Each structure stands twice: as C-alpha cells, then as structure tokens.
Amino acid sequence: MFNGYKIVDVDSHITEPPDMWAKYLEPAFKSFAPSPDMKIKGEAIINKISDQFRREATQQMMETHPMAVLNGFDSESHVRAMKQMGVDVSFVYPNSGLWVFGVDTMKPQLAGAFTRAYNNWLRDFCSYDPQILQGVGAINLHAPEAMVSELDLIAKFGWKAVFLHPTPIKGRLLSDPAYEPFWTKCEELGIAVGLHGAAHSRLSVTGVDRFNTEFAIHACSHPMEQMMAMLALIEGGVLERHPHLKVGFLESGCGWLPYWLWRLDEEYENLHWEVQDNVKMKPSEYFRRQCFVAMEPSEPYLDWVIQSIGSDNLLFGTDYPHVDHQMDIVEKMLVLEERLSQKTLKKILWDNPVRFYGLE
Image (cartoon, rainbow, N blue to C red; front, side, top):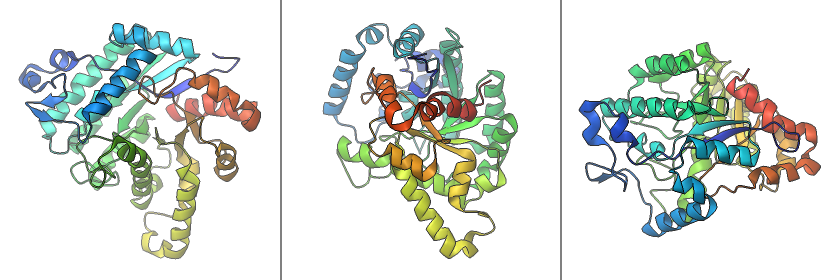
C-alpha cells in the first residue's frame, strides 16, 4: 500500500537465472538449454539487438537495481522491490522466456519442454511469498493440441493468468480455429490472458523487417502488435464466442486505443455485412465488455483517453526491472490524482486489475 492506495502491479518481470533452463528442462531436452548469450545450440534466439544496447541495458539495470543484480534478481529481491514501491500484489511475466517462447521455427516438442521448465521454475520462484508473487503461466502456442492440458496444470498451481505473444506463431493468428479449445477452457476456468510482446523475438514482429535500431523497433513493435492482436480477437469472433473471456494488452501504453476503437467502429459501420457472422456489435463494445489495457503515467493525454473510453478498463504495471522501468513509477502514478481523481486512480491501481485477474 502506498499513500492509502492498494496496488496491483499487472506487469512485472522476473529475470531467469542463467542456469535455470539447464536445471529445469527434462533430461531429453537439457542440451537445448540457452547459453548465457541467448543462443540454442549456437543459434541466436534474439533478433536485431545490438551489442551497444545490451551494454547500455545492463549498465542501467546495475545502476537502478544494484542489490537485485547482486542477488541475481531472486524472489527476495523481487518482493523487496515491490514493497519499496508500495505494491501489494505483483503479477510476474518472463524476461528471457519471452524470446525463448518466441522462436517461430522451434519444434513444438521443444517449445513444450521449455514451457514446462519455465512454469515449474516460476512456481518455485513465487512460493517465496505467494501473497505478493502471482505467477503468470506460459502456454505453448507452437502446439495448440497441448494448450488445454497446460491450462489445467496452471489452474492447479492456483494461478489466475497466462501470457501469450500477440504476434502470430507458426502463421496462426490468435483467432485461428486451432486455438478455439484453449479460449473455451480459459473462459471455463476464469483464466485471464495477458498479451505481451517481445520486440526482438524470432517472430514476424512489426517493424523488424524495416528498421534496425532499438529506437525504431521498440517504438512500433509493442503498440502495433497489440492493435493487430485486438483486431484478430474481434474480427475472428473470439470475443463474440467467449463473452466472459478477459484479455489484457500490456506494455504498449493506452494512447493508441481511442484511435483504434474509433477506426474499427468506422470500418464496422461501413463493412459490418462482411464480418457479421463473427462480429455482432461494434468493436468498441467488445473492448469495454472484456478487455483491459495497461497505461503509462507519463502519457500526457490520459484525461482525454478516459473521457473517450472511460476508466473501467485501464490497468497499471511497473515493468520492473526492465530498462524503461523507474523505481518511482508508483509516485508518478499518484501525482495523477489531481488530474484523474482519487476514484479513478483507485480503479486503475486496484479495482480494475482485481477484476481482470479474478482476485478474491
């Protein structure tokens, strides 16, 4: 709690220890454990990331989180950072796992082994303080036939959410029929789905085929992939068929959302006859009914966004401990109280994420 506000961090990140994969992979797959420089059997799993950026990112993390770096970003360090910021509950997403699970050419069986290894390690990581540390499970999009059984196991862990790449894997949009049993099971179990991109994954990420700098790739990849993921879920009828499914669009800000909903509503007004089997109401109505988006406190137009779409679907994530994370981010959120009101801030920091993640 910070200044009277209870806070759910909807998007923090663990930093997997370099030896984690080798320890947790099953014996038949241990030889595929990524090396410290993020290669699998000599092949890089990170796309278009410069040595300069790696050095700058490492230096910034060491300066911002010196004790966490010293302790290998272990569970205790994560909990300490959350308490320092005033966070009550922290939902943890992968770091290097975002890249490991995002190699499009990876064989489904190997991707499944990585998925199991990560989830088992994350369960141990979160067991240090399960009141604060809430695991967000990995799902193997490379093998749709295994996704339902993976969900059952995640539910047995007591977790409330899973994460997916918004970018197509093996050429499948999120609306692909192969994923339909997965969406049905998510709805049945009340499992929220957090969509989280990875700018340098070995997928067809927006911008990677055009640009080479971190500046350009990071700027466009996250919001544009989320926009297309939302479109896939609406246009493909996933949200129509699963009205109780909850989907969160993370680490991309919220400024794109009013424009995108306006744009989709305009297209629907003109072309509804083309998608009427899957889309039976305006796209913005699907969003308001069952979708959420994580905002950034530095976005200068937040009051206008709230006037446009309301405040019931906004979330807050710290992005700890990534390079664009700042330890005073909660303080920056509370500065917004004067502009947005205490009631709105309480929604964003607690009420909405509690509803999204199905917390009791």
